[in-house]
Image (cartoon, rainbow over all chains, first blue to last red; front, side, top):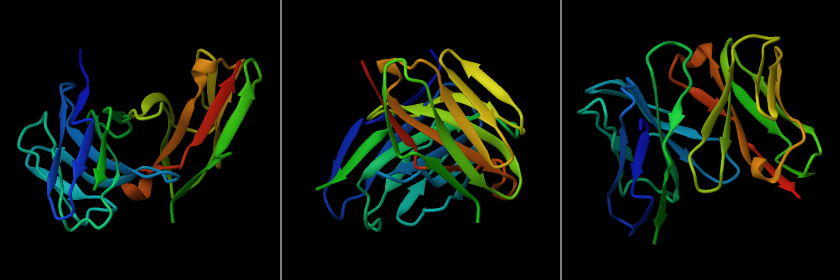
Length: 113
Length: 112
């Protein structure tokens, strides 16, 4: 079955640690995205990538880093510089083309201890 | 500034009681408006895309409509399994093809 997988489902981080969230898709989509979701707020874009080896900052990129070495994979690292990392993180992808909808993975809930 | 506002924040319905959710937007050039359904602790599930005023899309008990300022998600004779948060997102010309602006969502609870 085609889809987007994220792992782990739950992640706990101690203050000062870097953690990496995994996102893999087998939909052959070119573009991939990372969002952060906080209660009572809309999804906010962290980073996006349109092609391999290229990525762009979104609205809230500070304290995060990404890589895009393969078309299928777009991991997100939450660094110790991110002041308030506790949130629900969502990965999405879409086909090339101007108006195509984004499809989302199941999400990773990150909690800072 | 491009903005998307959803109302109400929360809605409680009895099974079979039809209602509508609202998504109002102010953007510089609408490229598309998207509706998603999100269950607790899960990723959003795509429902509809609307591109131009007057367009309508239907799926089971759901019908989405679009005007120049807002979109409505009409729920006809809802069932308890329709309970979820419904998200609206807009793709604006100013944001390019990669940026969606999301509203905060409407939490819908349908009781038997």
